[in-house]
Length: 117
Image (cartoon, rainbow, N blue to C red):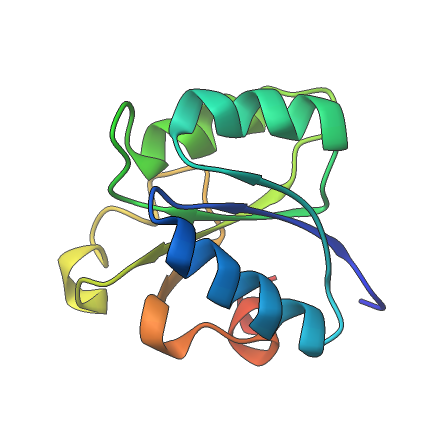
């Protein structure tokens, strides 16, 4: 996937900035950011990213609900859930969701994302 477009969704601006820097260095094109779930859906509608990296714990709706709402868009992005929690906290929930998978925040990378796609 050469320079795929990506949306970063996390309620911490500092994390979004770090994730943007990391993912752009690894060849992604960050087309939008959002600090909550409702904004994420709006941003995805406008920017039409190919991939959305979505924090599970958001202040309004959780990442699983965001994934569900994004899946209903005309051009839905592939959703990768992220969290500072352990992978085992979400292993049972991801398969039944609209997300492609889960990556712990400290393991976020192009390689980790592409393994799920």
